[in-house]
Image (cartoon, rainbow over all chains, first blue to last red; front, side):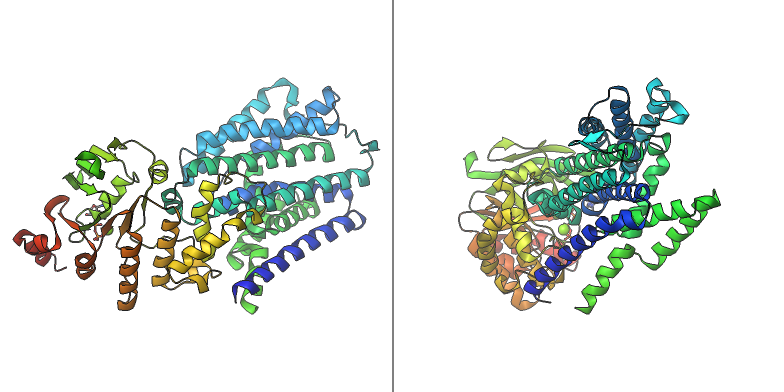
Length: 315
Length: 250
Ligand SMILES: Nc1ncnc2c1ncn2[C@@H]1O[C@H](COP(=O)(O)OP(=O)(O)OP(=O)(O)O)[C@@H](O)[C@H]1O
Ligand SMILES: [Mg+2]
């Protein structure tokens, strides 16, 4: 393939990706329950934020639930107890996730590989412990009945209104992630992931780039958490638990890490399974586990990754 | 005259868990020279590069650049001072095109590398310079090919173009012609000669005809220590050097 054809092809791929996301998103609430669709969107955003780190910076965090969960709690609390406007509550959640992200990043980036992952896990466990201990988080019950409020005079209590609000936030964040990947900063991240010593020899302070990637990823994971608190109207221990950190790895790998759409597809798969199989009780985990093993064995690049590879071979 | 020296080590030692890879080397690289570092396999040449560019901390001894102590500086900062290395195994960014590889080097001085919100096209102002640099190493026609798909010799040329994009004051080249066919060797040697004008080059090289042709001064390392130093004629007639080379069948 010539360079020009490659560029046209990648331009087409980006267009197709966007057209798919927009079209599916617009009709979704007419096809499935809006609450279910919102759950998918929130998890898709969470996984896309995670993918920015794993897929484009090569850093495996095992503590991303801390950002999702803490933002969900803070947003829920701000909306419920202080009756702050929805955007302000969400902003507070994102701010807390960002600060946590900075803290986690500074500490965990002192190590690499498995040690990096373990530090993020350890720190996330500390956050979990704090959430359990603090009185305002509602312990085992979590925060329930978080008010959605209004946005530009529109009552978000209406499921359709809430859905399209969620969708707009998702699209904005999805766009920002794309922009980041292709930005000058994203180019440096790619360079670092592909050959770190070479990037250093070109004068890049690679740790600072990784830290910024980590903080952006944490902020966006926080945005997913804030959105979740408002859309689904609750925040629970499940959002800060380590299982949630594992689930996001699973969603990203299922869909295809380092691909634009992969994490969203993975989130759709996982949330669908959890939702429609929930009557089976604890068998859900067995089924998702099995599906995951089979998919990873069969499609090492994830669903979207394999489809991309297929098209790349044919053209 | 000390400020004649652009790079210097003083009794530098590197131990790897008790194994002494570099055993007190004092190296003096003159500004504007092409300095060869040769020696049998495992002599410590790459380790010297790692010490000079701060990719590895020295166990003992000191390293000076322009007479200033850089023994404790971070590697990236040494690179920004203008001491830029290449790698023994060709170091490119495989999924980036040749053009993008060179642009990575060009974009840092632009100061926009932390701008995650800036569009991709904000880098296209660098394209002309990147293409010119690729042209210098005969890679202009391959500008849009991912670096990973280039043949080995072309990868090395790309690596050189990327390094030159930084306009380094000192170039450290680790076996720039290794693994190349005869034709490519000649081409790279010519290129080094050309880019060495106005710069200092320190190069590790096994191809002795390249060394003889290019280098003003040669330091021979063996088992982590300096065995001989001087012009090619001087070191090649040194009996100790001959023995070290025959002994290792190089
Ligand atoms: N990171 C390391 N850990 C342990 N030992 C090392 C390390 N790097 C190098 N060595 C050892 O130090 C010695 C010198 O290695 P070095 O790579 O500097 O040799 P060299 O002169 O570049 O050889 P070559 O011509 O084969 O490239 C070797 O015995 C090598 O095994
Ligand atoms: Mg070597």
